[in-house]
Length: 396
Image 1 (tube, rainbow, N blue to C red):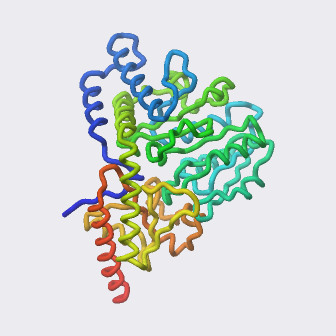
Image 2: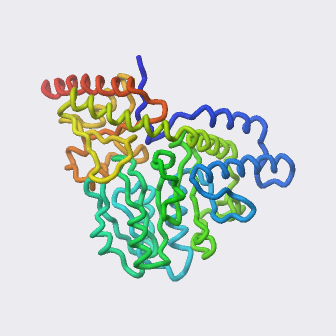
């Protein structure tokens, strides 16, 4: 059986460069990065080297003794998002009870954190995204002088829709120059041609396992202005690691793998992006020819080609996922962090899909390892699945 892994937005295979680096660090650099002896200094050097590689991949200035910005390592993108929202909202007394604006289609690590902040006294507004585009009129109406934080993801994890972070940030800063703008760029890091550091965001979240690195490592990129004004505080306290922003012994092996993956993916980025574009075009062509009843949910605005949302005719996504899996094709029904909850996708509902269609939608997400053969396998398996599952439905 030919295996076609097309769920790269959930996680990516570990790239060879990351695996090699992690093996070397595992065998040779086992000290605690906070220890002052030689082994500790070697571990700290491995962390520092990885930080510099990620800074470079972000298109930012490299770290040094005096950091113009900071990269805080966390255990995941989810933790980095929590640090951004909770750390920014609670940093200053005058922000208490202020307004927070987030996208309705954000990852649960943002929407649920915003809801938590609402329970402790903050005002929260959610901006819908019909056809994947932020409702800018609704956003303008929600912006007030007491808005302290705006959070908008760069690339949506279910539809591939790209938010206009520049426009969102400009409106926020015009209303309140002190507002902080956070961008969850987990699905956009090394998936778009523009470097993330060029985004006009104060806080940017990235994750290792979405770019060929290991699971269990994320990072929050923090601008100089945020550091100078002490506009971010930690929410995990203890030994004061990561310049006091995230206590806990650093995951040296994972961080080293993250750095190696970022360096490797940066070098092959142009080839990767061209491959994504070609695979998307090929998939859309085959679907229109062989699966005319399957609808591609293309965002109305800009979108990243490596993520495709497909609505199936009369077949629940969960049922199709099991059929495809038995055929060696692996896709998902949406965010891997919430697909087991049994709830309808908040992203697809905001996009404009009725509940029944949202329940019959799958996500296909390409990775660096995918080829046209994987697309062939997907379309052929979908055709078989639709025919088989439709017959079973009629027999009931």
